Structure formats: C-alpha cells, structure tokens
Length: 259
Image (tube, rainbow, N blue to C red):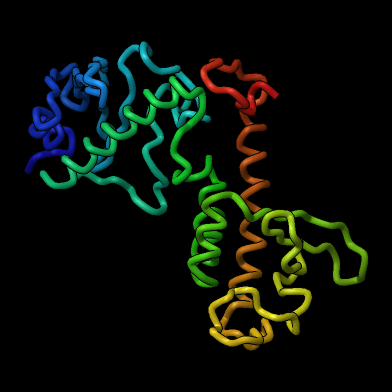
C-alpha cells in the first residue's frame, strides 16, 4: 500500500513538479508556480510525512518568510494549510493527494499576492491557533440566524465588547452590527439579557418580528455567537502574545508584531 508521501510523489507531475527523495519519509518538490500574467516563480519545497498527514515548507526560505503568522507560516517554516478540527487534509489515495497538492498550489498563489499587497489577501481563512475553534462556533451560530448574519460575520461587520458587572448577575457581552448595539448576553450564563426584545434575524417574514425567545432557537444561537466572538478575540490576542519579542519579517503592513 502506498504511503501518503508516495501518493503525492506519484501525482506531482500533474502540477508540473519534479521530485526527489532526501529520505524515505521526505520528498523534495521543485514546483514552478505560474501566475496569471505568465510569470513563473520556482519553489523548492520539502514535504515530510506523519502517517496520513503531511507537512510542507520551503526547503530553504527564499521566496517566503521563515516565520510569519500573518501569512500563515508557522515557526519552522511549515505552511498552515487549514484548521485540523475541520479538515485534517489526510492523504490516503490519488484523489486526496491531488487535493492536497492543489491546496498547496493555492496557498503559494496567495503568498505571491500577499507579498505584493503586503497583507493576507484571503478573508475566508481560519483564525490563528485556538481562535479557530471559536471562529467555527461563531460561523455556525451566524448561519443558524440567517444568511445575512453569515455575510456580516464574514465581512467583519460584527463585533463584541465586554462590560464589567453592574448587577449581581455579572458582566455582559454586547454585540454590535456596524457599530449599532443589537443585543447583550450575560457572560456567566450565556443567556440573552432581553429575551423579550424583537428578534433581529429578519427571516420571520412578518411585519412585526417575533420576540427573541419565541423565534425558533435564535436566542440560543445569538448567545452562542456573542460568546464565541468574545472568546475568538481573546484567543487571537493570546496567540499573538505567545510570540511576544519575536522579530517581524516586515513583509506585511499592520502586522501585530509591529505594534
């Protein structure tokens, strides 16, 4: 039975790549990345195997930084290709090997755009580190409320703020859309503060929207959305703090390392 690294080597030519084997569990890929304007940028990649999962990096950092969380390059230079809890990107057959190489190909194309724009060009990407877990919950909750909420989350029009305790029930998390306060949630219990307020889903089809507590499970979903957004923000801050003191590669404007 072919191993993951063998499967990738077998289909590498589909992407114009040539390969070599530094060891039985490592694969060198010389991949010519052709851009829309006809230019070709050569990448020399090192692929390493861990069961059915593979890591990949530039063998020697050349076109890419050796480390840049903003550009989804881990310490050690390996590429962050996705969120493992959602997609392990396992390579088990020819189809998954082709899919894995396509993801690497698209990742490198985004890197070329990032170098030119000096920012990560794809908004549809997983948050850093553990923040991705909370991002996933927020996405599911927003989708359960309405398609419009999903779009607002995707376009970063939703935000939350934590307000300290002003009552015995403790702090609240307030959710805003385009700067306008929409609803609040008790932090300790994760329950909406005003269950009698009109639901803001916009999907009831009635002239007068239902009360939040009576509109499907939208009270629950709204609460999960607010809490997840708050935890997402906290986790992102913790992620960047964990690299405090690390030098910035200087390839992106507005990188948190520069603050």
